[in-house]
Length: 157
Image (cartoon, rainbow, N blue to C red; front, top):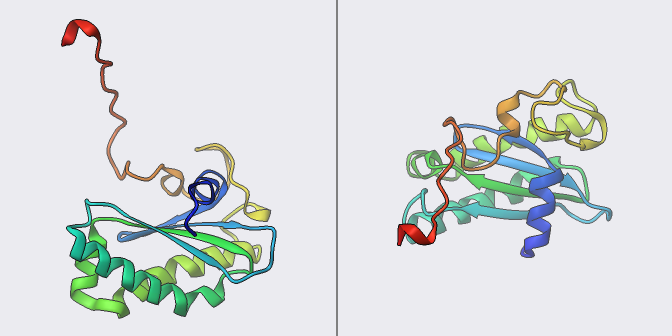
């Protein structure tokens, strides 16, 4: 995936599955094509070399694991800071294992597994369902309370 609108749709309406190193968002498209991948690897993961290595490993792992997702799925993988360490320690094997666990959860829900609502729809954060609330937390808020920042006024200049 490359269009911003595709990413937004997956983030807003898709199901999220979180692990220590990765977060996987999955949302069904209308067509039955092969699953599509979008990546989000921020500078928190490391410099350009480290980020590019993590992205390359994620693409390879997704190519190996995507057949377990339903046809016509859009998936966005968000790499957390620990993804760099995993890539350095275990390489493709570690990234594939971490992504495979998340894909298994997502594929289980799509087949009517115990961990979610039918149809892959997601309600507002904290609204019912069997999935833990932490899986519905927006990206970038891993573990900390929400911080509100004061608005700057002309008097502050």
